[in-house]
Length: 280
Image (cartoon, rainbow, N blue to C red; front, side, top):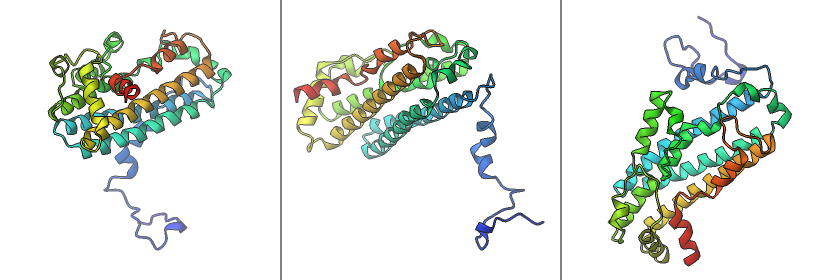
């Protein structure tokens, strides 16, 4: 059997017969990924809109994977492994921030050509973004009803809701290191939204003031600060992109759009980490 061979690979031991072996495309499931852009209109920019959001969801999936794994590392004081995963999360977040630059190439008139066809679907309904918020300790449940339509998605959210957040695990690690943390915090109901606590702030402040003595904990707290900082940057770029394209219109999912996005920019996942900086 003869096989076509590009001039550029002559002399290379490149496999070309895959009748019995798995190909690159098969391994990645590219047939599913590249055929998942189901446009509803003939508008040129609708494919851009879909792909930008699909790419974002893929990156979010990896963030959830890395944060949950980092939580398991922190539980057993394996900080180096956690640092590597959180550094990866930070680099993924850079990709998520940059993707708004791509979507910003779409003008208001471009979007109007297919916006009505989206119905009530909206990025506000991203269950993976909700899972990331849960993994960081923001455990509001008012939007869970959105996901009751799909038991699989609902159960994923419920499982993440019931897991201690990475902030919970960090606070417990600080307590294991000998710092006095209020028992109400250590034994809190993890399905509830985290609320700031003075004992946590004082412990964190002591770590920062003696960073050489508690370097691993200090580095962990800085890694969490990096994650929240980039999350805020992502929210800001999201807000500005939406404002650029639709102004102050109501979002397709019924939210107040830009006004809602502006409100959540300064929402803190790790309040004590930001408070202590004023006091150092």
